[in-house]
Image (cartoon, rainbow, N blue to C red; front, side, top):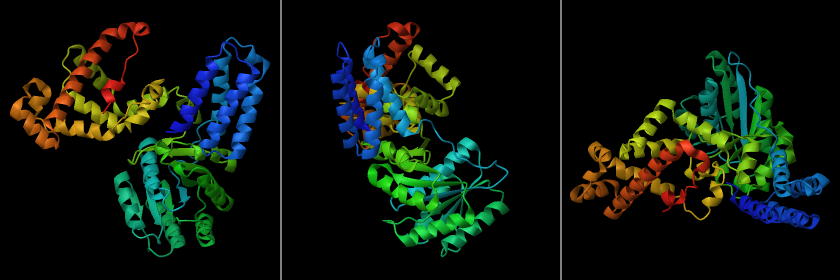
Amino acid sequence: MLDGITRSLTDVFKTISGNAKITENNINKAIADIRIALLEADVNITVVRNFINDVTEKALGEKVIRSVNPGQQFIKIVSDELVSILGEKSQDLVLKPTNTLSIILIAGLQGSGKTTTTGKLARYLKTNDSRKVLLAACDVYRPAAIDQLERVAEIAEVDAFVGDRKNPIKIAKEAVKHAKRNNYDTLILDTAGRLHIDKEMMEEVRKISKEVKPDETLFVADSMTGQHAVDIAKEFNDTLAVSGIILTKFDSDTRGGAAFSIKQIIGKPIKFVGVSEKVDGLEVFYPDRIASRILGMGDVVSLVEKAEKVYDEEEAARLEKKIRKAEFNLQDFLEQLEQMSKMGPLENLMEMIPGMKQQMQNVNIDEKQIKQQKAIIQSMTLKERYDPRLLHGSRKRRVARGAGVSILQVDNLLKKFNKSKQMMKKMMKMKGNMPNMPDMDMSSLLKR
């Protein structure tokens, strides 16, 4: 996520922190490097100019030059300005109480991930806010668009309304009536997208909005399209009065042009970001947490929140007890791999651990390999998972065939398991003396 700008800023901070004394010259050099990093990240030129001016003004102030640790103070200034251009704080959806129908209109270009995002948002509202959600298919042009929305609704475990499959405005009006009659408290309208903006499309979306008067109008943008996403968002906002942005493919965005520019250019907040293809891969956008991850400082709060959704205290205590007694087995290892998969892509989780992103720069985290490891363990009997020492000769050949791998790959998994088991046991012994715990090299467990 935003790897390019993270690497550039990390290099700048290393340089300026290594100076014995912070001067006007080296601050100017650092600011020039930051300007280049932002422009290479496809950030809007006006946003870059304002950002640089604000950082320069604060960084060249007397308090910074004379501070005890001016290097850290400079990083703090950059961090504060990043948070500012990203939107200061998270913005909640403004919806009515659950005894009244709230309407959310989803707009955007074709290919931006609108329909998938509609399902993710429905799942989020159902899971986190206990809302009864209905999806309505207002895209009658794209082949199979309605079928796709019905499938998305099924995956999200919410209901879908189709209507007459011909007139989008009529479908929207009928969906509102259906939602009210059947006591839904949230209706999400998935409107049609196009490959480019045209007057006919914009007029249709405007008419739907005028008829249903949505509480929220969310523009879905592909974050990987950079400034183009910002330009399109501006066009939609001029027509619809957009209330918020959802950036899709945020976990794959290595530059960050859209994230850095869109709030400043159209004046509307990023409310959610798509972080995986899974139905629960939608997250609230927290500017301060994203800025922290960009600067390589991690995001422990988000990591804990993810873990709390997956792990419970009893399970954690049971696992710790097994590790202490050296009873941790391959079945436990499989369960941990499955739990981690529920938390999202491993590379994103690594970014949330302070300092881990820099440590993992030259390590290839292969999600396919993790799936392969799970397949190997799943090809074993329960008895073999509990006691891997049983795996010899014909047993290994059977497991390898079942998982579609070589015997060597089975051996490699067993070696990694034994190594991680030993490491976890050492960590448990050190737990009572955390201040003196040495740095752990996690990369050896994750290399291909």
